[in-house]
Image (cartoon, rainbow, N blue to C red):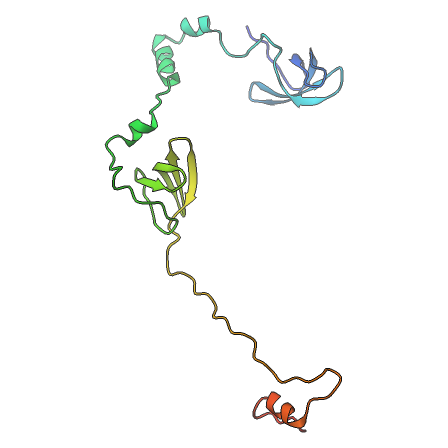
Length: 191
C-alpha cells in the first residue's frame, strides 16, 4: 500500500545540493504527486526527485498482471493506448505529388497535407495552418514558417535630393534678393 503524502510531511528524496538521499519536508504537491521539497539538512528548496531505486510507476510485473481488479478489458485498452504508431517521413509523403511541389514563398498560402519544396530544408509536408503561420514537417524536423504575406509590395518612397539653396558665410547676412527668393510667395518678408 502506498503511503499518503501531504504538504508539511516528510519524504526521503535526492538532494541536488548535498548529492545524497536525505529526509525532506514536502513544500508543494500537484494532485497526489510531490512537486517541491526542502532538504532538512541544507535547507535547500528544489523539485522533488525520488530516491534512486524507487519509483511511483507500477513495476512491469504489476502492469502485466493488470495492476488492478477492474478487469482485463481496461488493461488491454491501456496496452493499446500506450503503443505509439510512428509513421516515417517517407510514408507520410507516399501517394503525394512530389514532382509538382511548389517552391516555398512567404507570399503564398498553404493548406494542410500540401507538399512544398523549401530552398534550405528540402521537401516538406504542411501539417497545420494557424492564421499567417504554417507548420511544415521536413525530414529532419518540424518548422513554423509564415505564409499568406502576399499583397502588393510596399512602394518605396521616392528619393529626392536636398535642394541647393544659395547660402553665404554664416557670419554675413543674406542679401535682399536671396531673402525674397527664400520666403514663400504671398508672405512678404517685410512687415
